[in-house]
Amino acid sequence: DGGITQSPKYLFRKEGQNVTLSCEQNLNHDAMYWYRQDPGQGLRLIYYSQIVNDFQKGDIAEGYSVSREKKESFPLTVTSAQKNPTAFYLCASSIKTSGIAKNIQYFGAGTRLSVL
Amino acid sequence: AQKITQTQPGMFVQEKEAVTLDCTYDTSDPSYGLFWYKQPSSGEMIFLIYQGSYDQQNATEGRYSLNFQKARKSANLVISASQLGDSAMYFCAMREARSGAGSYQLTFGKGTKLSVIP
Image (cartoon, rainbow over all chains, first blue to last red; front, side, top):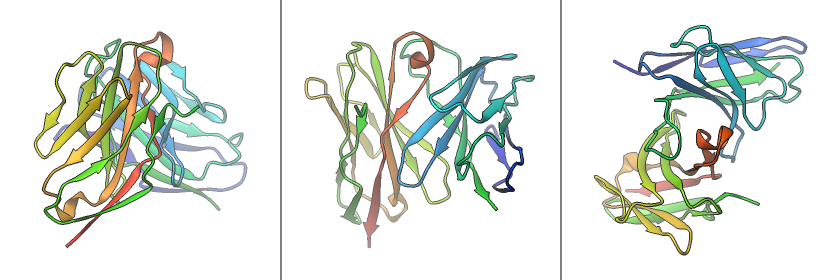
């Protein structure tokens, strides 16, 4: 089945530690996205990538880093510079179009990150 | 200023009844798209329905329909014949056709928690 796989489902970070969240898609989508969701809030964009080896910052990129070495994969690293990392992280993908074409973003099941 | 406003933090509906979830948006861009997503307790965001700013008719997808009132900048989701499985968070989102991140970024509201009562 085509879809987006995020792992792990739960992740714990110690102080000063970097952690990496995995996101893999087999939908043959060019574009991939990372969102953060805090309790009682909507999603906020961290980073997005429209093509391999290229990515752009979203609204809340500070303390995060990404890479896009393969079309299928878009890992997110939460660095020690992110002082409040506890949140639910969602990865999404879509076809690559501009404007407001019906460009639906499809989401993974998310990773819940907590600080020890 | 909030670009997407969902004024109902929580809603209750009787099973088999219809329910309307409110969404208002703010944009000066004449070209934009509006999306509704469902988030069950498992966490995954599930796409429900889409409305483009130039679409002449209200969007419908099975039991979901979108009451699009462009002049009032509202895009309310209507769920007909509610089912127990409809209990979830519902998010309204918008994409504006401006350059840069805007043409790809979705801006989300804070969501409405819908509870379906047997």
